[in-house]
Each structure stands twice: as structure tokens, then as C-alpha cells.
Image (tube, rainbow, N blue to C red; front, top):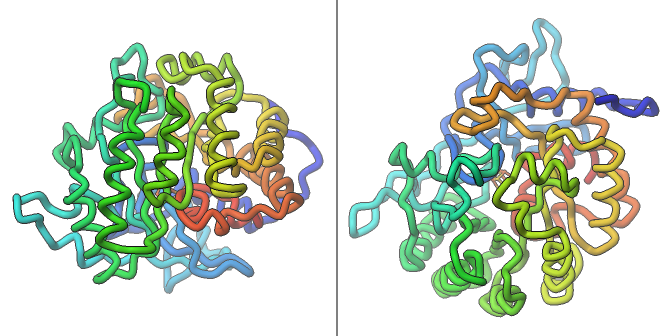
Length: 365
Ligand code: SF4
């Protein structure tokens, strides 16, 4: 795939892209070993130019050309100008529920101040023929790192402790897809209500497939969710069929209807979606599609595909995209976000507000 030629690439953005793909030679006490979606990383705070202390989810990779020394990122003997520090292990990880479940198995710290949980850790689409090829949602279950279904009471208990002990400022709640027309939204509604009863005012983002019955979007909002992610990963039908055989059975028109209803209910820039770079979509089409999402009021969270251990993609030897491609797409989407006056931070909760898994923040999006 060729990348457009008009890039006056910002070196800092390119370096941030390389870090997202190749990681850094360093340990990280806070990790996200596997789970739903495309990330599998250590958690850091990164400083680049005007952005200081931004969340960054980076592979901890002993083979990376980038090292961490004296709080800075080095490429060989060259100081890249980026600052980096690992996020400390939070105190709430040391606690256990009354029924014996470690809090860490119920929700995890992402970045320095985001609590994240997968309410239902199973997915109806996890058969090998249906599964998204970048996803490991049930692997963390098999490895014993989490529990299949978190109760609303457990989530409320952990959220309260994470806010009180570790300064958590927002909660991301995702779910595997369940049977029934809510596609997981029902469990999210109950969980949001319980968490907000324990921690009033905590910004919460919910993430699910487009519910078959769009009334669930209103129910999620009325339960108190601040933002919603309805993640399509690609707008290219051929890419969707190849990478997401099960999920692509939900037509793009259903995504569009769900996004529009979500923007109507939650308001503009409270709705987001993931777009993965590196699935084979033409970069200019990806950028144009992101522009259309922005016009609908949906924030396109652009994230590099990476072949995480345990995914079908890794088994099949599919490589991550190049840093040039990631930089090109990120800069193109960030320019459209800036033109629309849309920033990830304004989502208040969720992946776009966290920004760790994307290079968009470094590019001004
Ligand atoms: S962007 Fe989303 S998945 Fe990535 S670290 Fe932040 S909250 Fe977690």
C-alpha cells in the first residue's frame, strides 16, 4: 500500500508512532495483558512538545530501538526530546472483594487515571470462524486474569476504591457481544447505575455494538453514561468481512443509525468509534471516512493494528502497519478534527478522552 506524498512529517509524531508500534525497552508496573480490542501494553505518561504527561499505552519490548533513561526516550545515543515515565501500580490492585475476587480481576488501570473494565468477558462471536482477528477478549479469561461477568456491585466497589485511593477520573466500560437485541447494553445499563450510585458524577463511557433496538442508547444515557463508543474498526466492507467475519454481519447502515441516534441522545463529540490502521484499507479512503464520521459528530479514534499474542492475526503472521502509514493517517485525521473543533479530551470519558492507544493526541487531535 502506498502512502500519499504530501507529508511534511512532524518528527515528534513520527517518533510517537514508532513508539506505539515498536514500544520501548522498559518494564511497566501497570500492564494490560490481553482483552477486548486491539491493545496489549504497558502504561506510561509521555511528554512531547506542548503535550505533557499524556497517557500512552506502549509495548514493553526488549527488542525496541527506543530505551528509557533518566525519564527520557532515547534512540541509541540520541535524545528524542520525549519524556516518559511508567505509571505506578495503583493501590486498589491490592484489594479483594468480600467474595474473594482481586479488584484487579474486575477492572484495570489504563494510563494514569482511567479505570477500564469488560463487564461481560465473553463474546457470541468468539468462535474461530467469527472472531475479530485482532481481538483476545476471552484469552484473559482463560489465563485467569479476569472473571467472566462482573456484577454491578463488584464494579461499584472497585470504582469507589480506585477513585478514592488512586485518583481515577473516568471509567471505560466495554462488553463482549451478547445474544439478544441489546447486544450487551443491558448489562452496561445496570453497571453504570450501580457505579454512579457509589461514585456520583464519575464520567463513564460505555462501549457496545449497535444495539438491535436503538432504545438501548437512550437507556444508557438515562442511566448516566457520559459518552458512548460504537466501534466499527473499518468502514471498508471487504476489510470488515476479512477481519471481522462475525461482526461484519451487522451492516454499516446499522452503525450509521446507531451513531446518529447516539449523537442525538448524547450530543456531538460524546460519541466515538475506533478505526484501525493497518487492516488493508487505502489510507486516503480511511481519512475520508474519518472525515465523514466527524461531520456526523462522531470522533474517529484512530489506532494502529498490532498483532497481539493470542490473536488469529498473530497466528497468521500479519504484521503491524509501518510508522509512515500510521503517521500519515493520524495527521490526516487530526487535521480534520482540528478543522471541526473536535478534540478527544472533550469526550470527557472513554478511549478518545484517554488517548493512550492512539497517536492522535500528539498530532493535535
Ligand atoms: S485508549 Fe482506551 S483502551 Fe487504550 S488505554 Fe485508554 S481507555 Fe484503555
